[in-house]
Amino acid sequence: MSRPPLVLVVGTDRYSVADRFRVERDRLVAGEAAGIEVFDAEEADGVGRAMDAARTPAMFGGSRLVGILGTLDAAALDRLDAWCDSPSPDCTLLVAHVQAGAPSKAQKNLLRRAEELGRLVELGAPPTRRQDVGHWVRERAAACGVTFTSEAEQAVGESVGGDAGALDALCRQLAAAHPGVRLGISEVRPYTAATPAARAWDLTDAIDRGDVEGALRTLRGLRDLHPLQIQTSLANHVRRIRLALSLRATGAQQLQQELGLKPYPAKKLAAQLRHVDLVSADNAHRLVTKAEEAMHGGSGLDPETVLDMLVARLARSLGPRR
Image 1: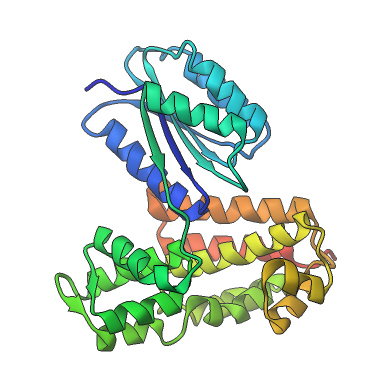
Image 2: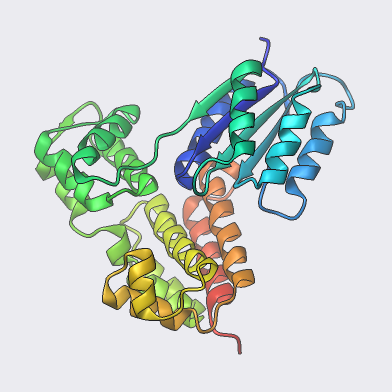
């Protein structure tokens, strides 16, 4: 099967982009023996190393797939655009770009090249308006083989908000528990009664204190939740910290305005920012991203073990320096 030189996935929601990256990766290598290398676009020279890999012929011949996942800056997007002038004949570049802000000129150029050379996948952002949530829930649930009554659909939408990771994890749980059944409120209520974000507060509090033992003990009490729900809550927590640091927003009132937080979460976040720097937050971000990849088959470990390791490492990374 002939593969295109470039497949580009673009979206604003990191979970959705990473999830589609895996779908496209599996589709590209289905039924073929292909060498695969994946690079983190946000690591030092990650894109440069990916470009080197894309231009280096396989030692024993055959087709190759080089993946790049993360938020690409303008320079990285320009490098990929230049690669499209003379792509390697035996290599496909699978690029999953998490768009931050409005699309740049460099991004628009690469989108055009993807349409010309291969395949472009543009993912819609999670809904921001309440009237759009129902359609979004329905569409993502259908991809998991799940259908809801209107009442159940509303309850699920209210539970997950615009969190694509939490929604997909919930739909997979429901699909496993009730295969082939149109789900009503009685089936979904046990899963939506306590949202992962609310129940994970004690866990993130222990992590923010640097209390490894306490965090692991709290994690044991969340075992009835799907591991991906817990991972997504942790990823959201880390993302909020990184965003606050990048905005240089430190006071609780400013955090309420900049991030749309309620007073209590804003006060807690302000306290956390007093002892966390951007280096620690970036490291925490890499940890949650790698953990999510591991839960989707990127390692030989079971999801519970991955979570144990993630929680311990986050507590060491985000806790106060001693």
